[in-house]
Length: 483
Ligand code: GLN
Image (cartoon, rainbow, N blue to C red; front, side, top):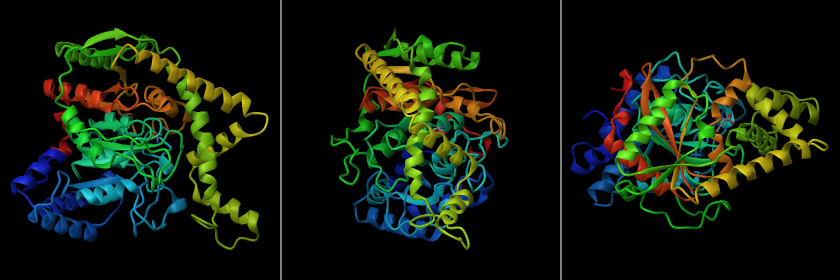
């Protein structure tokens, strides 16, 4: 049997006996080879995946299988997988072998999911296009001259290219939602603290969160449910029960209220505007009421984000010094030479830019002007969201200003690249859950719509996305390569 496109269809095929995990994983591995031009994976572990598939089939035969048992997936190469290379897309960690499994990986193994490979990514998750990887850019399966988005570039391309039905990425300022939008997928960045980050390489610790990418809201719900929950090894992980996200998908949305913020809708390209209007009409037809909310400071978030995220990155990345972790230069003459050359050789351009910006923003004399001001803006954005959620259950917003751009189009201008995140950053700064779902095509390329919820409001987002996907077919659009 060929590999079904969705996680739920794979689960159904395994459950009914129409396919074994051995067959699905073999097909997925064959597609990873055939689709290698996408450069979606940094590494794949064929032997390990085949062994895990055999174990999954045995588990199913023993009547101990869950919905993910035997389903092939990939995880972004930012999650530690014991005994395997974990690179974070960087030369700095090019041949580093993780000594333990990330919490998310452990949970996936417990569920019986088969990790076939590690997905390519922008170096240390810094980027919006997948072009900042030390292992070369990932291509968009919808149009190989375009970027898949970033930084979870390989996770999105692996699903959209049909290599696997589901993937995990991370999102600090948009890195799940933006690639999901560019690749026609549903991506969920859960509430800050919903998934443990133990074993997930840090970029900006007050923002980083893991989450799923897949074709449908149902798949995203299933994948999130498998990995969410408290873990004492991550002090930021939330100690609260994990709801049944799959059940939330079928809840009625009649009578719920969704906000729209005029400040987020100004000067949008016509295609993005029309897409959001169509989402609104569809949800209204399901009984949702729309109501205006005020988010006047949200769009200033991008400036605050690039100060805060870079400041945190500059401290998190200080551990890569050629001594404890990471690339070590050849023949250092003294300690300073060791630090300077190891870091100069190990890090790419964008990572260096962030470290320099972040160090500057934290330095004496500039701290108040930059870092403290950025934190104030962050607080204002959060407060605006919280007062909006006094009146509405969720907020509808764009994900990206345009569909996937061409490879190379924004590489010469870092600020143009940063502005790609203008619509995803506000929810990140406020720690809110936000989902990106396919909502149309523009010139043959996918466009997404974003639903932002209150803290731990993932169920509402799944209910809205579930209803939307029952009414529309956007999540069924596939690039030719994955058809
Ligand atoms: N594109 C944003 C950045 O470069 C967001 C990255 C992310 O969410 N990891 O920082």
